[in-house]
Amino acid sequence: MNRTRLRSLGVNVIHGDIRSASDFEDLPPADWVIDAAANPSVLAGVSGNGSSRQLFEHNLASLVNVVEYCKASKAGLLLLSSSRVYSISELASLPLKTCGDAFRLDASAALPEGVSEHGIDTEFSTAPPISLYGSTKLACEIMALEYGAAYDFPVWVNRCGVLAGAGQFGTPDQGIVSYWINAHLRRRPLKYIGFNGQGRQVRDFLHPRDLASLLDAQLNTPRKGGCRLYTAGGGAGRAVSLAELNRWCDARFGAHCAQSDNRERPYDIPWMIMDNAGANRDFGWKPLLSREQVLEEIAAHAEQHPDWLERSGL
Image (cartoon, rainbow, N blue to C red; front, side):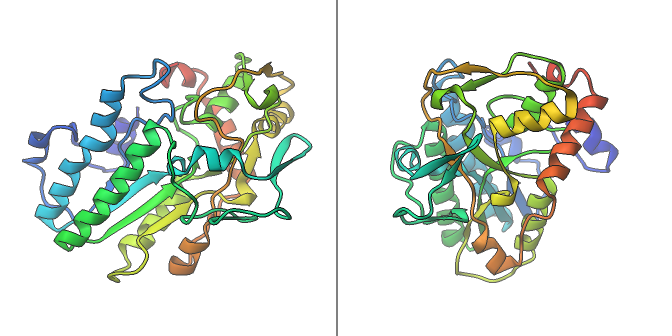
């Protein structure tokens, strides 16, 4: 689906497998590489979601081919990492309070390093466990930065929060906002899993166009040294709980109730909002699309593409 659209925009799409070193041999030199490749599910490698070996091959082993290509062509590297590199036990123990249908950070309590009322930043703990998926992304960050330092090519690492926008594949593991809106519109079964089955768990979301503006600023910043690692998310203004998202869908499409499921799953977290202060300080960057704009864009796309969940592989 996406290849056809990219070609219509004049993008030269080359089919290859980054796990295969030979697939890089005939590639022309590039100025920059954006590495967004991964099995994106935090449950990858467990719970029947692919094998652990496959996760390693996709997320980490493939990176050596990318950085060797950057080394050979002196290309800069923009590595898209993940908010899931952070310690699950530390996230689970954050002081939270219940405010209506959502968990909120209790900023009046003592907070660990790397978290404030603005969200999580790069100083927050990455102590294990962080999931098999998170550990591969954290290892990729270290390897990319080491290659850049050793072979003198620029590397920027962005720990991205949830991405959301029209045309995103609607899957519960990755495109949860797109999935929820599409499933609500089609009256598919929806569940609030864990945390007493109330749907109060909160994440922020970032539109790809806003992320693109950050990447553009980074690849046009020639400085050497200094901070190379940033958090990039929607921030508090684009945060929503599942229950709040369902209420928005109720108002948009008509009422459709989600079921409560009290079972706890490994790696689930109650609250995660990204603090963009570092990217704003160094690049003047902040997300511009509002929460309402992103949700409405996805809803309009869902209405225009009634088979989107099937086309997304569900």
